[in-house]
Image (cartoon, rainbow, N blue to C red):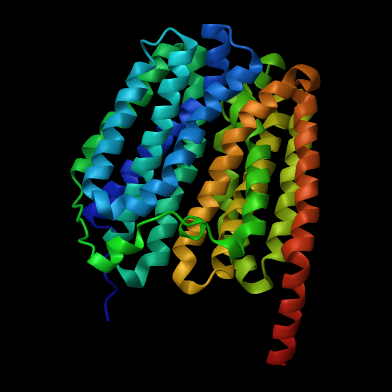
Length: 400
């Protein structure tokens, strides 16, 4: 029996669209704090907010977009989201007041929340049910690639051409994403009266999977720690005269993450989540310590390798744990809870850390984030790791 085809035109276009949206997101995220300082003479706290307010916009909109996607219509939400996403990107070229920049950045993030929610839902409809795991895996790689190529291009463009060319590049990504989405076959779903009635009102359980709460809290804290890398690596590398090496930081991050994925994934399935989560969180911690002491380009890139495997693998492992803990019919909501917690950590991090920078300095900030990750390891042990170990022991006893 032949397997249904995965790499159809629609699936290719949905991956391309998601890649380009994510490229815009991560390219701007890594340079925006420094841009706010240079262009508007913003203090570090406001510069951090200028970067993170994008994610705050995404966070505010994502739950509502998920709930009302099929009420408004997938096609309308997708195209509206990408069009606003492109317009707000283009406005960075002409805005010359910091408050207006903040407003535009917030709307830009909200548009990303709408567009990314819609494109993810369209993706699930474009792949055969028999190959959903494989298809979602390939789709998620588009974001992994963007986390590497986006910051790499950003740092390279800022060093050699300036911010205007960087904004033009991100605008081109948004426009091409719109063109790619127009090639998609997007089918709207007609909801029954009962389904429409179920969407009325606001209950916390409509937006949040409570069984995933401990891991969601841990993901907020880990995202907070990682935001120190994503937001401030450009400014930090300039301070320590390692800007050239920093342009390759996220390339190394992604290469080592992708290279380790087959081994860590197999170990997760065979040996259990503890066998992956503990060493990877430890590796994330070590990467932050190495980053804090970097005085040579190779040391900076070594930190990128450690953080790539450590944080990148921990993030996907936590997502899997959250889905496994949820009832089967709420697995989608567990995924939504994961992304909300991920967005929240990345959103509050730059603002809080920006306020702490004057007293801590960059090296002190990264050491502090290493301590935060250590606390996460302890938190994981008491909320999940200890229980999970005993459950695995019971399963082995039953098998024997």
